[in-house]
Image (cartoon, rainbow, N blue to C red; front, side, top):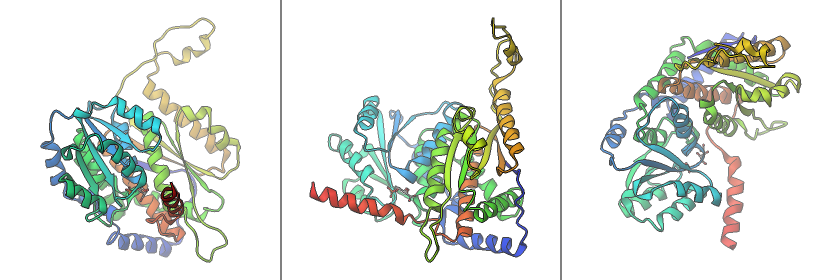
Length: 407
Ligand code: PA5
């Protein structure tokens, strides 16, 4: 994975840069996600190897950090890998969604993963109740939660399999823990390669190699200009990263949008996940000529490993588009990305950078995920927020509980 920064953002103050690096090294001692690329995954691999062959569907019941990461990786790999099992998600209390997803499933060929760090999330537990009531076979369920959570205690009481995520790994940073690795391994995703991609970025950063300068400079710029460049767009030129965008939006938004004690106003950077070329016909106009409050990160796949050529035919009245003849689609999509990038560069006031991932595989998505987690931590440090909590979502939960008590 490469990251090229195309705007002037050099961290001129070396002491400040070293201080930020030291803070991240320090955080690594107590924030668990940093070390997930090096975790022991024997138990996960064994669990996946011994899994019942008659099971065709793995069904995740989880929300936010407990589902978005696995979904992003699964949907990224799905077009290129023939996976062993299908992965389904119940993430919403929308009755139409619950009913239609259930309709697609043969319950006898499905295994349910109930994933919740806290073990008490309304969405997850309500959907679990709905599925469990008519299907109370404990062997149909595996629970992934914090050790000793109420969900853990419940799972123990019915004799279901339980797996744990490290207590110091937060929800939205948990995709490389059992939260993401179990569903993915059961579907046949190469989780070793996923972690090795993440480790490449981790090593590169902590050994101050290739990724160090661009990510430090970018974080510095984002934080320093957080009051004028308030929106950070990713513009990924591949449909495979559609759900990665959702994961990014949660990671960035929930980590950096925080109340600032004693400050004039709160802080936060707004994430937008765009997909090219589709969003060229939509959001691009706003970037190009709207308020200059957005940074844009182009994400490109270097090698699609898929040769699909546009046939050299001439269409009456459309002769001017013969320039498309014989052009392979993988070239076309990357040329589209380059062209938009060049056009934006000409405006001179939109901070741009480009991330190039090698191919659509486990290693690349592992790298991209870790890169964004690290960038979030760096910007969080610089903004002076607690990147890992989310007190702002509690108020609504309390009101809901109150309403439910009165029902
Ligand atoms: O990042 C977070 O901590 C949250 O978004 C959680 O992932 C989300 O609220 C789901 O929580 P839980 O895994 O406890 O069910």
